[in-house]
Structure formats: structure tokens, C-alpha cells
Length: 161
Image (cartoon, rainbow, N blue to C red; front, top):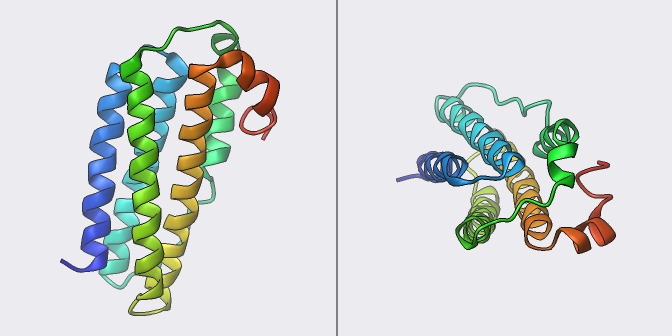
């Protein structure tokens, strides 16, 4: 299996996991966040298939952080209500952060060993998106596990851009 095929496999596993998490989470913001990131991963799969076929790769105009800002802006009232999160939901965010960190490491190695400039550009874009996914998961985990301190220390990150 080459690196592009491995990327497709990893991205599909992420789609499956994030879709499953969205179905299980009770927090409306968390649910939309998981679905938004699953959509990002689906886009990565389509791009990987195009790169594998030698087609041009164009990064998405929207970034994961911009997408999350829209979700948070649309659900400010939900965010301001303390929604208790279950240990399972928090564990899902921990696992999501681990998956994203592993993907970042894999894509950095793949970028350094890319067969051509197009592949390198593709992997570099994946690194950027996956780093943003990691930050989103980390920020959301902090919000759900300790909302009061999240607002006190981190309110300038996703909520305000």
C-alpha cells in the first residue's frame, strides 16, 4: 500500500469514527463539530483519489477553524448553557486528538518522502488541516470538561477566531 492509499484508509477510518461519535454525543455543538470534521476528512479522501490519478490538487478555500467558528457562532446560546458531558464523550475527544496527532506524524513523513511536488503539496495541506482538527478537538475537550475555565482562559481561540 502506497502513502496515498494509506492516507485514503486513514481518512476513511476518521470519517467512520467521527460520524459514530456525532451519533453518540448529546452536546449539540460537539455533534456538529464531529460532523464538520468528518466532512473535512471526506474531502481529503476525494483529494487523495485525485492526486493518485494525477489530477490537479486544489486546497479547500474554507479551513476547519473557519468552519468551527461558524458552528460556534450559530450555537452560542447552546454553549452558554452548561451541558454535562459524559466520560464517553470526553474519551471520544481524547481518542480524536490521538488520531489527529498520529495522522500529522504520518503526513509529515509522507511529505518528506513525496514522489513529486503535487504529492508534497497535498500532504502539506493535510498536515495543516489535521493540526487544525487537533486544536479544535483540544479546545472542545477543554470547553466540555471545564467550561468555566475555558471561557476564562481560551475564549479568544475558536469563538472569536
